[in-house]
Image 1 (cartoon, rainbow, N blue to C red):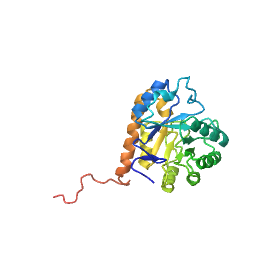
Image 2: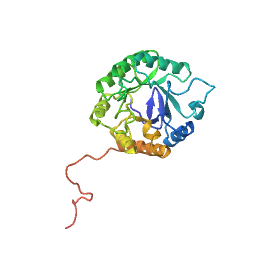
Image 3: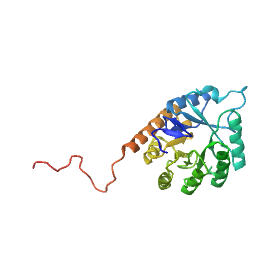
Image 4: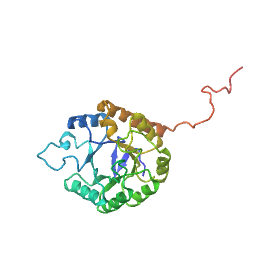
Length: 259
């Protein structure tokens, strides 16, 4: 059910912004950007970041795990079997059963393989994982993932890392109309704070981003900007914008004016 705070797998988050941990200059910068963003959840690529070897420097050592939830993701996987195995590895490493499911179908565009994602989602949900699947902005697939037992649906706004912003607002609106019992979280394509605000104004429950912050000229300032953009967009959605009209409407009505 839609709730005043972002609720995923029964846990509430004050922030509706989820951030990634890749592409930063250092773990220290990752932590600083996380703090500036106000996010309470951060994604970690199981196959690309050391989370299992205690003898090596570990991103988790730089995070306050009492304040932030780790969202392991299956980035780098191209088959359902790879993604399932990676999610199981993360759980065995003690990170938990929450997982961002990502199965890439095309190495150039990094678009997801929706069929493989659905296949993996069904297996992982049956094993007790809380699955957050990254998919195309496809309402039919969103419904199938909901029915498979996913904890949220995560349609892209644009290709990963492109910074293009929302490219098909109509599809996102349809998904929001059809998926009312799970969080709808925009994942991929956001480039700047206005993109984040626009998505939130549509009524999405949250936004996940990495490149837009980590690859900015000043990641810490951009993290702060994204925080404000998400908050402003959500407030505007809750406030309810005025209807669009073709012609002007006087700010000071003429009715009752003494002539």
